[in-house]
Length: 136
Image 1 (cartoon, helix red, strand yellow):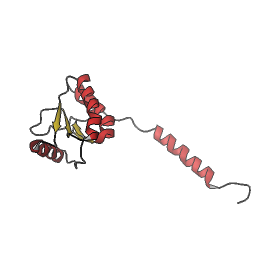
Image 2: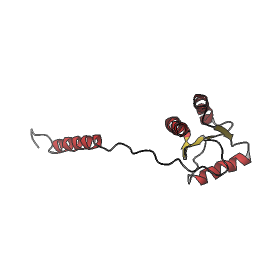
Image 3: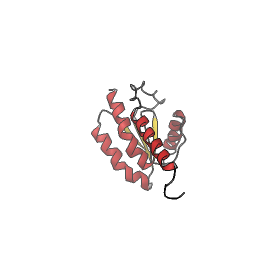
Image 4: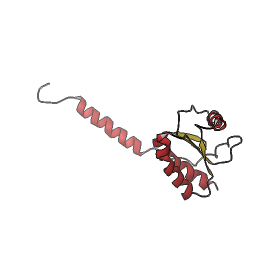
Protein backbone atom coordinates (compact mmCIF):
# COMPACT_ATOMS: atom_id res chain seq x y z
CA UNK A 1 0.00 0.00 0.00
CA UNK A 2 1.44 3.32 -0.93
CA UNK A 3 0.78 6.51 0.98
CA UNK A 4 -2.44 5.40 2.63
CA UNK A 5 -1.56 3.33 5.72
CA UNK A 6 -3.29 0.17 6.76
CA UNK A 7 -7.05 -0.13 6.24
CA UNK A 8 -7.16 -1.97 9.60
CA UNK A 9 -6.09 1.12 11.57
CA UNK A 10 -9.54 2.76 11.38
CA UNK A 11 -11.30 -0.53 12.10
CA UNK A 12 -9.15 -1.19 15.19
CA UNK A 13 -9.88 2.30 16.54
CA UNK A 14 -13.61 1.82 16.02
CA UNK A 15 -13.58 -1.56 17.75
CA UNK A 16 -11.62 -0.10 20.68
CA UNK A 17 -14.07 2.81 21.01
CA UNK A 18 -17.02 0.41 20.93
CA UNK A 19 -15.41 -1.73 23.63
CA UNK A 20 -14.75 1.28 25.88
CA UNK A 21 -18.32 2.53 25.47
CA UNK A 22 -19.79 -0.90 26.16
CA UNK A 23 -17.61 -1.39 29.25
CA UNK A 24 -18.74 1.95 30.63
CA UNK A 25 -22.39 0.87 30.39
CA UNK A 26 -22.08 -2.28 32.44
CA UNK A 27 -24.72 -2.76 35.09
CA UNK A 28 -23.63 -2.07 38.66
CA UNK A 29 -23.22 -5.11 40.89
CA UNK A 30 -26.38 -6.30 42.55
CA UNK A 31 -26.86 -6.63 46.28
CA UNK A 32 -24.61 -9.07 48.07
CA UNK A 33 -25.93 -12.58 48.29
CA UNK A 34 -26.42 -14.56 51.48
CA UNK A 35 -23.37 -15.11 53.68
CA UNK A 36 -21.38 -18.24 52.86
CA UNK A 37 -22.21 -21.37 54.80
CA UNK A 38 -19.96 -21.91 57.81
CA UNK A 39 -17.33 -24.62 57.63
CA UNK A 40 -18.10 -27.46 60.03
CA UNK A 41 -16.25 -27.27 63.37
CA UNK A 42 -14.68 -23.89 62.58
CA UNK A 43 -15.42 -20.93 64.84
CA UNK A 44 -13.01 -18.32 63.44
CA UNK A 45 -14.14 -15.92 60.72
CA UNK A 46 -10.65 -15.81 59.21
CA UNK A 47 -8.24 -18.74 59.16
CA UNK A 48 -4.63 -17.92 58.38
CA UNK A 49 -2.69 -21.06 57.47
CA UNK A 50 1.06 -20.56 57.70
CA UNK A 51 4.26 -22.50 58.37
CA UNK A 52 7.43 -21.97 60.38
CA UNK A 53 10.24 -21.27 57.92
CA UNK A 54 7.85 -20.21 55.13
CA UNK A 55 9.31 -16.93 53.84
CA UNK A 56 6.12 -15.89 52.04
CA UNK A 57 4.18 -16.52 55.26
CA UNK A 58 6.51 -14.33 57.28
CA UNK A 59 6.20 -11.58 54.67
CA UNK A 60 2.38 -11.47 54.90
CA UNK A 61 1.97 -12.17 58.64
CA UNK A 62 2.27 -8.48 59.69
CA UNK A 63 -0.43 -7.57 57.15
CA UNK A 64 -2.82 -10.22 58.52
CA UNK A 65 -2.03 -9.19 62.11
CA UNK A 66 -2.74 -5.53 61.28
CA UNK A 67 -6.12 -6.45 59.77
CA UNK A 68 -6.94 -8.42 62.92
CA UNK A 69 -6.10 -5.41 65.10
CA UNK A 70 -8.11 -3.07 62.85
CA UNK A 71 -11.20 -5.34 62.92
CA UNK A 72 -11.61 -6.60 66.50
CA UNK A 73 -15.16 -7.88 65.88
CA UNK A 74 -13.84 -10.36 63.30
CA UNK A 75 -12.38 -13.57 64.77
CA UNK A 76 -8.93 -14.34 63.30
CA UNK A 77 -7.03 -17.55 63.94
CA UNK A 78 -3.48 -18.34 62.84
CA UNK A 79 -2.95 -22.04 62.17
CA UNK A 80 0.66 -23.27 61.92
CA UNK A 81 0.71 -26.32 59.66
CA UNK A 82 4.34 -27.38 59.20
CA UNK A 83 4.92 -28.71 62.71
CA UNK A 84 1.45 -29.96 63.54
CA UNK A 85 -0.21 -32.91 61.79
CA UNK A 86 -3.62 -32.03 63.25
CA UNK A 87 -3.41 -28.53 61.76
CA UNK A 88 -2.18 -29.94 58.44
CA UNK A 89 -5.24 -32.22 58.34
CA UNK A 90 -7.39 -29.21 59.21
CA UNK A 91 -5.82 -27.26 56.29
CA UNK A 92 -6.87 -29.98 53.85
CA UNK A 93 -10.32 -30.42 55.43
CA UNK A 94 -11.09 -26.70 55.16
CA UNK A 95 -10.02 -26.66 51.51
CA UNK A 96 -12.19 -29.71 50.79
CA UNK A 97 -15.15 -27.96 52.43
CA UNK A 98 -14.59 -24.97 50.14
CA UNK A 99 -14.05 -27.20 47.11
CA UNK A 100 -10.68 -25.47 46.75
CA UNK A 101 -7.43 -27.05 45.61
CA UNK A 102 -4.68 -26.20 48.10
CA UNK A 103 -1.90 -24.25 46.43
CA UNK A 104 0.50 -24.07 49.35
CA UNK A 105 1.16 -21.55 52.06
CA UNK A 106 0.34 -18.92 53.02
CA UNK A 107 -3.39 -19.31 52.66
CA UNK A 108 -6.18 -17.31 54.25
CA UNK A 109 -9.78 -18.50 54.31
CA UNK A 110 -12.39 -15.80 54.85
CA UNK A 111 -15.99 -15.22 53.81
CA UNK A 112 -16.22 -18.58 52.07
CA UNK A 113 -13.16 -17.99 49.89
CA UNK A 114 -9.55 -19.15 49.95
CA UNK A 115 -6.78 -16.67 49.18
CA UNK A 116 -3.48 -18.32 48.24
CA UNK A 117 -0.18 -16.46 48.33
CA UNK A 118 0.84 -13.00 49.44
CA UNK A 119 -0.58 -11.07 46.47
CA UNK A 120 -4.03 -12.68 46.69
CA UNK A 121 -4.13 -12.22 50.46
CA UNK A 122 -3.18 -8.55 50.26
CA UNK A 123 -5.71 -7.83 47.50
CA UNK A 124 -8.64 -10.02 48.57
CA UNK A 125 -8.60 -10.31 52.34
CA UNK A 126 -9.48 -6.70 53.24
CA UNK A 127 -12.75 -6.87 51.27
CA UNK A 128 -13.63 -10.25 52.76
CA UNK A 129 -13.01 -8.92 56.28
CA UNK A 130 -15.19 -5.86 55.61
CA UNK A 131 -17.97 -8.13 54.32
CA UNK A 132 -17.78 -10.26 57.48
CA UNK A 133 -17.82 -7.18 59.67
CA UNK A 134 -20.78 -5.68 57.80
CA UNK A 135 -22.89 -8.73 58.71
CA UNK A 136 -22.28 -8.23 62.43
